Image (cartoon, rainbow, N blue to C red; front, side):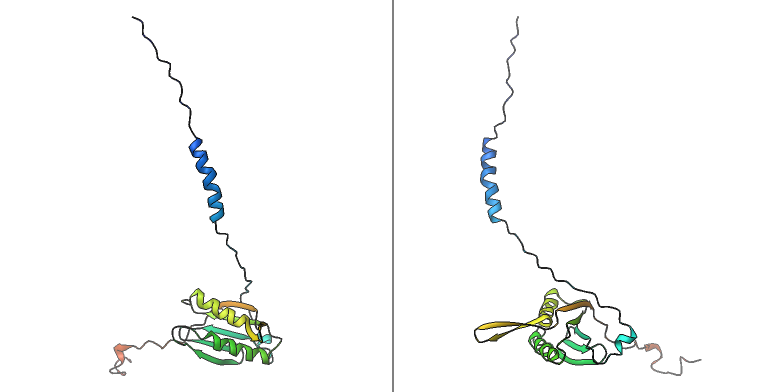
Length: 180
């Protein structure tokens, strides 16, 4: 008996539907893609100050410290200028900007400021304070006029507030008991 072999043709890949899908999908994805624009702001770290630089009384070394409960504006050499307490749940950046305008009026050539933030400061708070320190926009007639305040901002960590010394409760009842 003779066996007959069936000739099996190799099936061809049908990719027409796939190509049609790609032709439709690629323009759709390109048209709906979101292209982001990145804004880069140059920041410098605070410079190490020598003792000679700190002796210059006429030179303002502006520092803004972002605390949980307030904004502390001061001069590194002269001390605290003003403390702006928190207003509601957010820092009062309008009052900070008004203070920066007054400081800029007294030191018109000064362009540097140091921004010191506590570790738990949110990014949004940091940016709002930076914007208030860098410049201001004031309406004059029908136009908005931009004024530059302190555009060269250095960012750093805020100094830790002085913590109270721990109390030794073992010897508080009888102070002489712990002495030998």
